[in-house]
Image 1: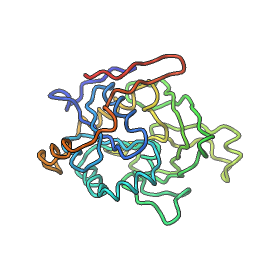
Image 2: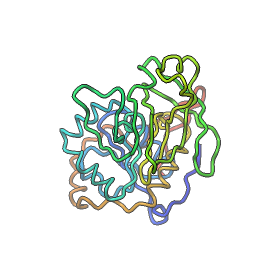
Image 3: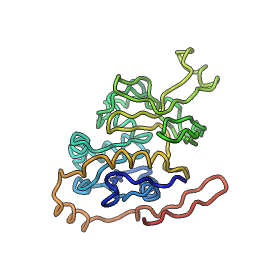
Image 4: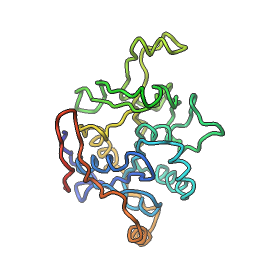
Length: 266
């Protein structure tokens, strides 16, 4: 497990990361944020974005998250958070949520997206739930070129990126997958990108023992000003009336044979 670096924001206090907690693996992300040295906040109300330097949109079911976000009037505050310079990271379904374009696998009638990330995604590139898999990936994590154990669960893939998007990881397609594709010449597919304050991964770093992606995101978020789009008093009222589903950062992480232990408050 990686140790957490000192970021500009954490010099005076911890980098605060909001985790969209409508559905999906938000609790696992909260645990890894704490392990990486940050402060995790479950976000179900716009007021809970107050003071956050970054926001994680977790894996789960993107249509469900979009429907709940719209019903709870969260789309506009989430877009405002990104527009005001907050760092945003989408994993798996969160990648779909951030994408500007869905080329394949779009739901009938369309799906509301946050957008902002100049990529085109294939929603179900890697197949259904039973096609889930893991792979060792070479990643462009600054200062650390060790491979990463990436878990793909009904995962999307990035088909193309805009000029301002940096590719952080690609997956080499096995022969059997290439045979399924119309484009037989395709050998690799993009699975992790960064564009200014936005980051996205097709895979799920939060359910491995490796915190390097969360450390990288804390470094990004630590350079951002805390979100001031809502009043602190409104945030306190939202927190007071919140019914917590999970105590952030208390979940254990399992590997094949090693129990990593619960996250410790730092």
